[in-house]
Image 1 (tube, helix red, strand yellow):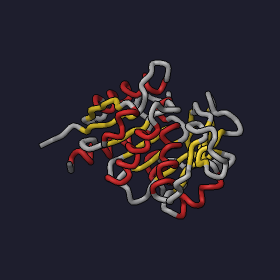
Image 2: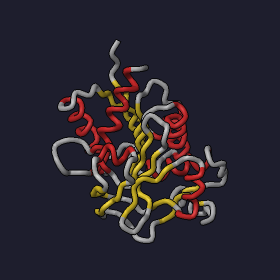
Image 3: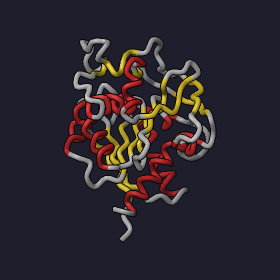
Length: 236
């Protein structure tokens, strides 16, 4: 029996967040133009800790600080441990690093400075950026052979941002040692893409591919998530 691929859009939906208004249209293009049978459900962050069973992909959307960071972290963990295709963009990227630090690296005191401004710098996996990236565009260099490189078909891409927080470089080596890879950096060498090798699809970007305006289709990272979701539904 053929199943529609069920995608959980985890975030506090708001008309004031541009990416939230763009995503339904992008998924509809993937359904109509690319023939990907997708069924998207918005999951408020306060409901996200109820589990991701029955979903074929999880996309943690921009919009932090979330009403429930606990719910967001639970959704990311469910996707990571359950082999459910995962994409995190902007705040989703930040919380993917936080979830990995706490639950894989054993960094029980790991924090996010936006969620808890009292977090000590040595415990903060996510810190305020030295320069805000709200409204910024820039080049991201892609690691050859990575999933991001395979999806993009290039060794660099233009990225659009809308964020004030990013990874603490002091903790990146610990995350690497436990299996997370960083496959995209800006021209200053700052991390912008993270992946989890061995997972069916686990990718997060500090930039927002849903804001890409080039061409009629969805950004390759979003298409990659949709294709992985369809494959997950096929084998469900």
